[in-house]
Every structure is written in C-alpha cells, then in structure tokens.
Amino acid sequence: MARIGFVGLGNMGLPMAQNLLKAGHQVEGVDVSGAAVEKLRAAGGASAETHKIAAARADVVVTMLPAGQQVREVYLGNGGIIENANEGTLLIDCSTIDVETARAVAAAAEARGLLMLDAPVSGGVTGAAAATLTFMVGGSERAFVRAETILQTMGKTIVHAGGSGNGQAAKICNNMMLGISMIAVSEAFILAEKLGLDAQKLFDIASKSSGQTWAMTGYCPVPGLVPTSPANRDYQAGFTTAMMLKDLKLAQDAARASGATTPLGAEAAALFGLYAGQGEAGRDFSGIIRFLRGK
Ligand code: NAD
Image (cartoon, rainbow, N blue to C red):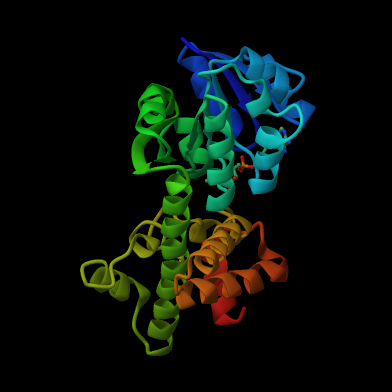
C-alpha cells in the first residue's frame, strides 16, 4: 500500500481521497481549508500542515485543485511539491487546467527525476464518490503503468492519451463537444416546440436517428424525457455552468495557441458566458435551454 499525499480536498478531492483510504492506502491530506482537512481526518486520513511536508513523506502525490494557477503554485512555487518530493515519487495532477501549465509542470518534475501525469477526470461528484470516474491521462508509459492501480481505486475507465498534457487536451476537446451539443439539442427542442412537434416524439425519433447525442439521450435539457436529467429538478447541478464555461475557455485558449479553428466552440463559450452572467453560474449547464428560450 502506498503513502499518498493528497492536495485539494474539495467536492471532488475529498471523495477521491476517501476511496484511496478505503482501499487501504495511507493518505495525508492538505487543503487551505481546515474544514476540508477535518473531513478527511474524520474518514480515517491524516493531515499535513503543508504540501511541502506531505510531498516529502509520500510515494505518490495526487492533486485536485481549482485551476492552473493553484497547480503552478503548489508544484513550482517556493517550498513546492517538485522541490520537496523524493526522487522517483509519482505525481498525479487530476485538476482540469490548461495544457501549457500541465506540460510545464511535468517538464519541471521530470528534470528532478520525478514521474508526472496529468489525469483530469469526467464523472463529477457522483463519479468521485462511487469511484467510477473516467481518467484521461497524459505522461510517460512508465508513469502510467505505476499509476494505474491507484487510478483504478478512484475510477472505472482509465485511458492513456499520450504524452504530457494529452489528458488535459482530451478533457477540453470532450467538453467542447458537450457544450456545443447541449446548445444544439436545446435549439432543436425549442424549434420543435415552435413547429408544434411534441418533445417526446422528437426525442424518440432523434435518439434513433443521426442527431443522436448523449446531451439528449443521457442528459436531456427538456424536463420529463430522461429521468436522471437535472432538467427534472429545476436544473440543479450536476455540472455547473461555471465549470462548463471554465472548460470552454480553456478550449478557446488552446485553440488560439495552437491555431485550431473552432467557431462553434467560441460561440458556445460566449453563450455560456452570457447565461452565467445572469446569475446562473451555479445552475446546471443544461439550463442553457432556458437562456436560449429567452426566459
Ligand atoms: P473545489 O473548489 O470544491 O475544490 C478545490 C479544493 O482545493 C478546495 O477545497 C480548496 O480549498 C483547495 N485549494 C485551493 N487552493 C489550494 C492550495 N493552494 N493548496 C491546497 N488546497 C487548495 O473544486 P472541485 O469541484 O473539487 O474541482 C477540482 C478540480 O476538478 C477542478 O479543476 C475542476 O475543474 C475539476 N472537475 C470538477 C468536476 C465537478 O463536477 N466538480 C468534474 C470534473 C472535473
């Protein structure tokens, strides 16, 4: 069993750390919020005062932080993980961040003889609690092989997407498709309504036709068609509009930096930005249908 330092015990990190504990690993948690650390202690974990201390004692460090800025601070800053981890330590960053930061941090880690993976997830808080997350992993084959059993403790589907940063690339490309498809599904159901076509009929036809997409069959923004959809509970998240907007902005930054043409990704980012600006940032992203209806 491994000694694991876990930095970032928020909505996702805490249940992930709890699953590591359940599997018998020793987990030492770090968070700027004392309340978050207390929750890990209550679940049988230990706490470290700083990520520096946790890194120096760990075989494996997992981070689950809000954004690239915190990842840079925690890994590269003075007294950071990279400076303090022992040679051979495996570092796994599960936060969703920009590809550039992921690659810069991995390069700094490798220069010190550490193994580093970017391993962002999909599956949300429910997947984190149930250990059914999908991990999209970027980094060397050697690091991936070492990380696999740890990741299997927290997730169900683990995919090695290639070298450093490719996990983040997979995450933002997937979520750009999702953001665009949610708008497409919303527009189609709004148009159908205007044309007098029953929503259930459109669902039955399109789910067996070429318009089929998970945004409709798995997460329909129209209430009453998919029992588990947030649409049935006043669009309570789920996956918040703020999170979708964050991922769409990361995709746009990456598109600009790489010279990719993504006009629909840009439009989706603009529309989710407007929807979030109406005080709906905490609402589920499928609530975009209400914005498009003009309500
Ligand atoms: P969160 O805000 O609930 O948790 C982040 C935690 O990091 C907080 O507890 C915060 O106190 C802590 N933190 C911030 N700066 C720190 C620092 N310098 N040192 C130590 N701790 C620090 O966020 P979350 O929902 O758990 O999301 C974490 C990451 O996972 C994000 O990158 C997010 O985009 C990604 N993600 C979230 C979801 C979701 O549904 N919540 C789904 C997929 C991916």
